[in-house]
Length: 403
Image (tube, rainbow, N blue to C red; front, side, top):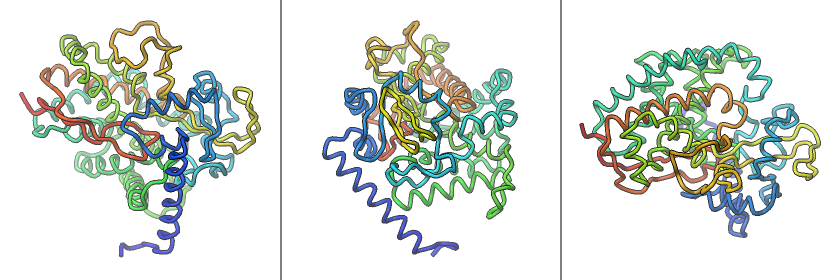
């Protein structure tokens, strides 16, 4: 038995997680589209359409209120009465047994203002302009030695973790451990909503602890000893590195699905920013934002008590035909359309969004320049019970290892 293991605690937590999964499965079978989203689907967008058709906001059998309405989402994200967790850091009572339901430390808007001095120098325009050169070197170095045919394992994830690690000052000798921890912590946002298997929960916990140690945290040290600088680096590692990898994977999958668009990018690699922007509309790496009401509120005229839990399907807004013509078509030539609500709030809106976009743009441009013969060789594989984070676990391709 591992040192520090607590069989009684594991049994209790495992039972709660199992009950939550069973509850969500039953509710999904009864026709609740949000419960089906929690269970997982290779293509969740038809479920998002069902959620939109239920009106601006509806009460799911899971206990959460759910919306895919752009006006409601925009209103909530701008309202300080909606927080990432309860005012005391506790989860909302209606949440369906989340493990990490207390929210992400440092994710409130006021916390970001307090931490601005620690994250802003990493992602200001001048820093990102210099960082793009680092990302380019990492992309080219990876392509020089790639031999496999999985875009995620052989390119997207190695580039994302190496580039993010370089920005955060991870020593070269520690990069393999850093990459392992980033991948292990990628499921963290999903644990806010969808109960995961116990073993995965414990691996996620270990990955976050590993990142904290890499950035100088002492195991078992009191919370008050954690510096703001280290907290920012851990948060960027658990958010920006996975967002970059998934953004690259989702973009390449969409581009290869319509070979004309991949060829267009290869002819003009400067279209990489357009490809990233369209991916953020069409299939973003962050699909959901969640908030808890700190006071009574009435979005869309619906009275909600303090403590109410609201799930905002931000990815659905990009497929809203009232905002985007031909919303289910991936196109690089969209003009003058509303900004998508991907990376819409909190941590995603501030340091993560510019970093993930910059890294993904460089990764796509280099890939198009170096591998114009890239083509799909099989269907992508997606992880189940991943309502917040979306990206292929595997994306089989041909031409990645060719020179």
